[in-house]
Length: 354
Figure 1 (cartoon, rainbow, N blue to C red):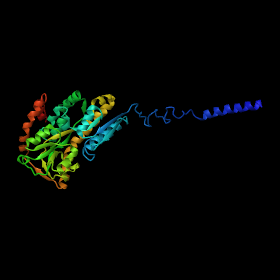
Figure 2: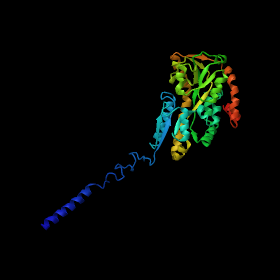
Figure 3: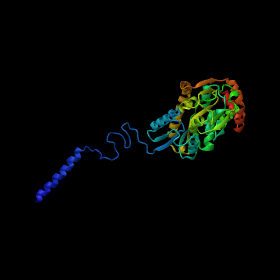
């Protein structure tokens, strides 16, 4: 019996040795190796999975069918791809998280990390941006885009970081703005007494009032019904926004003033930005720089196409004498030059850009 037991023990030991040799030394599952030559936590290309991830809430008050959807969607796509998924951008459009003012306040408080914004509202934080929307300040889109890419605007951006804790990434034009009205007005005299919606921008309000009309600040989401119920007779905005928001259903006269441009950017909470690794900061800055340049090139075509679509919906385009309108509005410039340190110098520098 003892011999039989000893033989069985020896056979068992031999079997263990043979099985170990056949395994080829492969690591057991969960040991940290991918088993295919890739490092632990990585993919087959050798790209490592980030140790720490970040989530950005990006809010837009604009419609998901607007031209600004491309800005937000492209930013999300490029940042997520270039950070290999380490930064996730959760995009909320159609004012899901509030109107533009709500979003900017959220970024400043840090309750959201980013939002789409324009100079009309950003100027309420840093008054220098008012100068960028003075009526009839820019000669054409080439002049405008050169200014938006210049150190003139770069200094404004740094001032807002220092004073408000908000970083403005690169800017692009929303498009020169026109009036869409129920009243046919081709001269300054015909604007007198009209009630027109304005965003909460002192410059735009002053521009409307310089033309003799009454400016009524109304939130963007309430404009359609305000025109429909005759609270106001129309509004001013870029043709793209006029079309995508379907305002042609309640107003059918496009007065082609091209009076003001609002710059558009993505704002970011500076404290959050500083928590990101330097390489992710660079990716975010570069992605928006690229997008802004592309949108700067696209703006003219987008405006022309929007006007064609408005006409197809039954809107009549009314041409004006721009010199008459410029003469009526230019006196408003002094107010904003005086309100900003070196304001007149900024205006002169903008006019000097070739």
